[in-house]
Amino acid sequence: MAPDTLSLAGKVAIVTGSGRENGIGASIAKTLARNGAAVTINYVSESSAVKAEKVAQSIRDEFGVGVALVRANVATPEGCDKIVSETLSQLGVDHVDILVNNAGVVEACTLAQADRALLERIFGVNVYGTIFMTQAALGLGKMPRGGRVIHIGSVGSKIEAPGIDVYGASKAAQDFLTSSWARELGRSRGITVNTVAPGVIVSDMSEDVIDIVGPFVALQRGENRAGKPEEVADVVLFLASEKSGWMTAQYVAVDAGLTTTAI
Ligand SMILES: NC(=O)c1ccc[n+]([C@@H]2O[C@H](COP(=O)([O-])OP(=O)(O)OC[C@H]3O[C@@H](n4cnc5c(N)ncnc54)[C@H](OP(=O)(O)O)[C@@H]3O)[C@@H](O)[C@H]2O)c1
Image 1: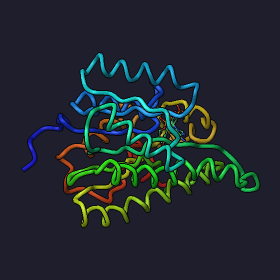
Image 2: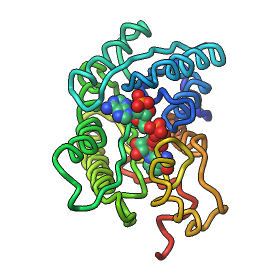
Image 3: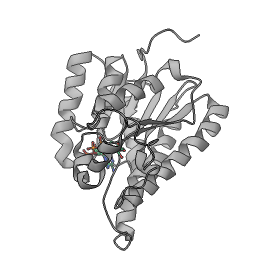
Image 4: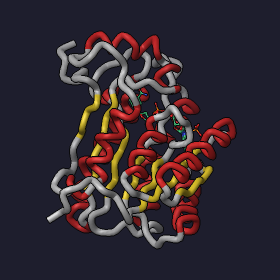
């Protein structure tokens, strides 16, 4: 029987796109580290280098766990292999227990504006990145029985948000990977795969499309405010823990009841 705790002591976790202090990824990395996991902070933009170093250092100082810091692009297999190999070498470990596919890209566009370059930017990170990163964590990272793959999806895969339908389509593709990989990885390797889908959460990303997503706050059933990254991170903690072992292929909305509201 799993111990009666959410402790992740001894576990190794990778959280992609976790270099911005105010982002969901950094909050997830902090929450997993607070509960004992060694974590990898990943970023891609030069403009996030200093922020990511600060996130990594604050986790080391506050929680005393191992922290790896890796600049790499999840949209390429080479970038994902680098994240995993640096995790193993910087942390001095031989496997990865928990993968949180958090890195994401949103861009508003009309149908006519959805050209190949835009599609490659959005699907390259949200879909290809999820696939390449999971392959790397399973292969190079030798994810063991009891491993956890958690996708940070979006309620945008379920509800229409005018202008961000390409983003919603990419997140719907990611949802499908959750349900099919749960079978493949559950049967063969005892690994669970779940999606945590944020609603409107305060971050740089939501600020970029606030005209589109801001009005959704009024449609929530919960409090009349945007959510906080920590409120997403706490749900990820449960799914990362041994307590969630019989839960797989799930889509867990963290959205103050927005998804199930009739709109
Ligand atoms: N905020 C919301 O309201 C909301 C709602 C629903 C779903 N989500 C999802 O939650 C996740 C986190 O969102 P957020 O709002 O916290 O975003 P954010 O941190 O403000 O920005 C996106 C993050 O993704 C990283 N990233 C983008 N492209 C990458 C690449 N090619 N390789 C590695 N990292 C890359 C960025 O890294 P750099 O800093 O290096 O650029 C950044 O840390 C995303 O998957 C998003 O779709 C957010």
